Structure formats: structure tokens, C-alpha cells
Amino acid sequence: MSNFNSIRTRIALIGLLVTLTLVLVATAQTGSGLRTKVVELDPAAGEYKRVLGGPPETATMRSGYVVVEPSKSVGKHSTETYEEAVIVFAGVGEMRLSNGSVLKLKPYVVVYCPPDTEHDVVNTGSEPLRYVYVVAKAR
Image (cartoon, rainbow, N blue to C red; front, side, top):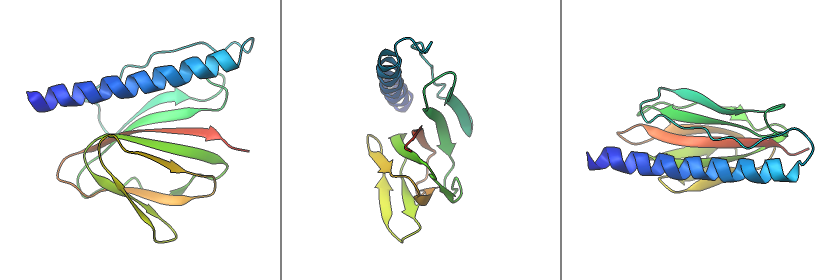
């Protein structure tokens, strides 16, 4: 039961981060029609849930809630013209960059990837790795 409560607390913290980010985006885009939004994350959700879908919902930001099972990965991909933040709130893993660098992922760690960064996220633990990614157009 305490593990479930811990996950709920972490999800609430991520929800707060997403909400605060949305408020800042909406405030900065006065007159653009953007509105604040609250997205509730489901701790029982499967592999992926879209959180923010980009324009016209946001100025440029997109995000999703990702669950990676043990020994699995999301697959190599590039940030291309976007910058990306990964906010981990459960499980452990690695972000493996194409240059050979490895960034350790664990709860309450935020990883930033600049544009044109090829990477993969791999669950190296025995429990699901749960995180939210946020991408925004950088150029």
C-alpha cells in the first residue's frame, strides 16, 4: 500500500509541474487563445498516454506519460529540432546517447536533451520505469 501511495504522490508532483508549465505558457501567449489545462495521470496506465498534443493546444510544447517495462526500451530516436526534458518519478533506467554517454535515471531526476540528440531510454530495473517527457520547438 505504501508503494501505491508513493506512486500517487509522484504522479501528483508531475501533474503539478505540467500544470505550472501550462500556466506559464498560457500566460506568455496572451491573446493567442491558449488556455491552462490540468491533465490527470493514471497510475494504472499502460505504455503511453499523450499529455499535451502541441498546437493548437499549446504554443509548441508536446508531452507524454511513458511506462517502460523492465529490460525494455522506447527505441532510438532523435530530438531533431526540439529540446526535450524527461522527468522520472518511478523506477530506474538509463538514457543512452549516440555518442556513448549514459545518463542514469531514477525518481526525481530531470534530464535535458538539446536539439539533434539521438538517444534511447532503457529500463534497467525490476519495476516499470515511469516518466513524463516534454518537448518544445527549439528552432
